[in-house]
Length: 97
Image (cartoon, rainbow, N blue to C red; front, side, top):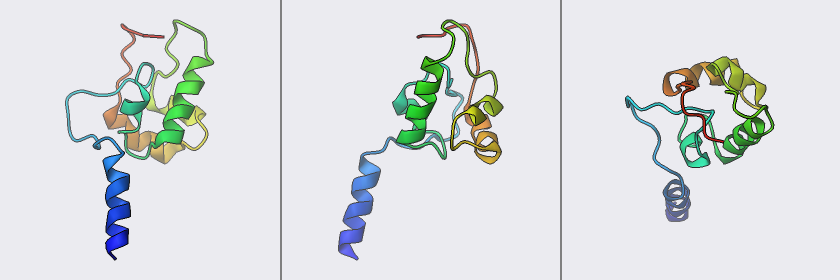
């Protein structure tokens, strides 16, 4: 039992704290990996998939205009996209590439 507690605590200490109800939302068009992994249901692999997907699209254009656009990422389906929607923003004023 003690080993299990140590392993679980090691996992959580290497992961950023989860998002809580906050007025600041994450823009998947510009977010870093550290920001993306804080989203519910998005781990390191999925965050990298999001970043790679947007890097392979046309520059200077927003890749994601809504949460549904995230369904283009393998492993993100309609349920996950719907769960992410309250945490996301799609403002296009400041796109950093």
